[in-house]
Length: 181
Image 1: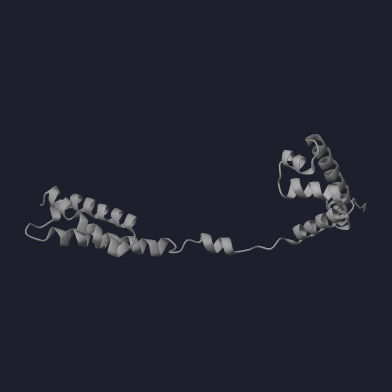
Image 2: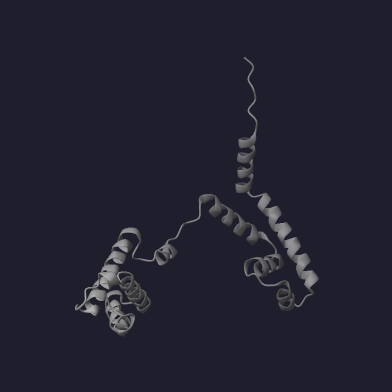
């Protein structure tokens, strides 16, 4: 058996060895602490007259290999987040058509309606900032925005895509007529 203070004396050497294996200071600290804990748990297996550092470093190495095998078997070595962020998904056909319809309807709006929708709905500017920029009261901004939204909605309700979509939705929800035999 060995004394606990002997284990503390070799702690720095164990950390250096763990760092050489992991190349990460946090993981090296964890690995060295785990090895020292395991050595204390298995203290009764230590043979007197042998090198304590060699015995504990073997424990440390075995813990490292076990952890490495577990990682390669059950975990990915690579963080998938950067790869997932680079993946792009194109808009589905119906979303693409809706965006096109909104763009067309926006182009037919009067300039003041287009301008206020752009500042508030697209750029996300607060009403007070828009009022200051346009040099009008905030109530005027709200009423213009309301009229602009209403006008845009009217134009969208009369687009061919919207009408075709509505006809398809109505046909899909229509009840089948019963045929008399």
